[in-house]
Length: 75
Image 1 (cartoon, one colour):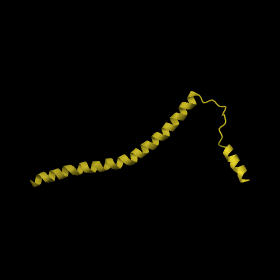
Image 2 (tube, helix red, strand yellow):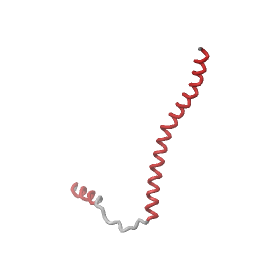
Image 3 (spheres, rainbow, N blue to C red):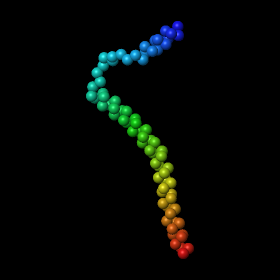
């Protein structure tokens, strides 16, 4: 019984001719959809990484002129 189940499962992965036509419009649409999903994932990761770094650099730039002015006043 287990052998039959294994055989049927293996037959499910055997490729068969699809007898279908994928034209240039459908192919371009599929490529655009895949690129759109990959692009959105990349932009989401970029935003998660970039904006905290940008905020940290902005705080550092605001703190630097105050420290320089304080140092020059002491001399």
